Image (spheres, rainbow, N blue to C red):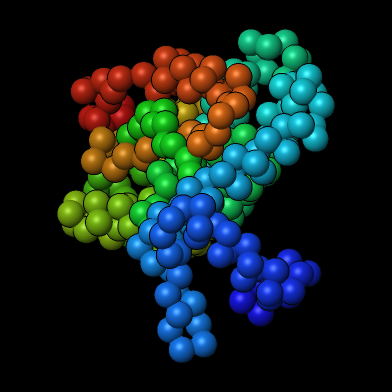
Length: 291
């Protein structure tokens, strides 16, 4: 009670009186006294959950009223998970710029998923673009919208193609390879797949930034893996060639939207565009070795 009074800049007696009025209005006790502490009753827990939702809606209302309505509808604040491939992020979000002809301005922030979800929950972001859904156990009022998934392709610089003539996946055995860091979900799936294939590449570098990993690949530092859905862009931008691909390592991509009364109008457009134009149904033959 004393801590709450200090934070609210009022006296403990004022808080105590307000709590008694609330209990009288509800008709049930909200707290049990345990020693010098107060603990919520079962009804108190229920009331707390509703109060939390009420304050969240109030915060959302304040942010909407404070912002210029016309400006807010033109600005799309997007959080992008650091491990998201930059090319996929551009393909997903670029459709908004293309279709709205400058009517919407993108404001992008990159960080780890827990930090972005906190900003989403605090009404500082309109949506989050992620390569994983909301983790279990996080108290986040938001929805997962799966955009699609992609197989995994393996690339090497065109300048080194003559050094990799073995069939896939044997070509990976004892070959220099650029790997995602061990903390990434892709790295764990990649390690498991390599073990099943009984091939052991030589990790020459571990890089958590997808664009930097591809830049190292372009410089001929080793083989690297990336989503098959952006094969053409990678080959063109990084002077690379596909030496193989597998459907046994898949990456999944999501838009995470907040649980709000008012959603940004561009959110649905992004989801529908990505599902219909980028993440098309997989071709069964795409799992075979690249020629």
